[in-house]
Length: 260
Image (cartoon, rainbow, N blue to C red; front, side):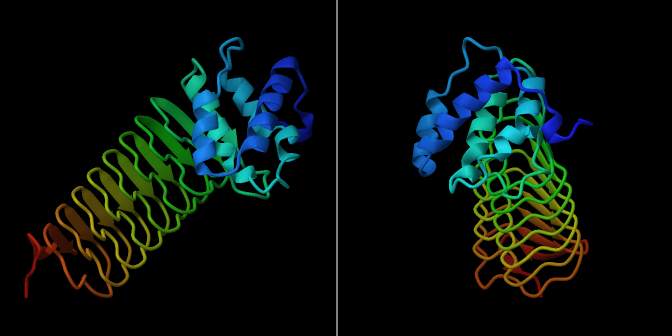
């Protein structure tokens, strides 16, 4: 979008989305309340288009609510807009926000979402299918509990990438933090940069590829799956129950047993 936020013209559809949003965000108190509000949100009498959602996320009207303590929960509302729309491709602009928005792409199902800017915590949480691309950095727990689809972060990510994921693919073009792939049940994670401590910690299955360097305790508590380390690493986990770990193409842990 070539416009500036203040150049987005007010219209009846935009006013409708803002009024629904204002009620949502003022009632939002915590995650459990967000779940309740998300499930009750309906837009039956107003067909919401991709253009409407893009203008809503881009307009100065949404930016007026950044001072609210629960503003990061706006991702639940934006996710419900996308999931309720008949359109399949969306752009959400976060580049002009001072505060990050959490839970963008929540429960995404077959939608293609581009986040123009940075994302907050738990982007793509519980998504079923579709594709999410973040044209910036993302914070904690990218793809947590995801069940399918693809997430690509063009920048860096914080801790717990793909925690408890059941299926799907996550690609981090930059670096990632602590416990990437922790408790993952299946799926595939690729980190093109470096990763912090305990990568693959307690993973049940799946595949993790680290193209940079890894920190301490690689594979701590892992039960199955594969970890590929293309760079250097600080140490292996103290207790590895199962699975294979490769270092620069060489098998160094086979079915949980370290190869000397």
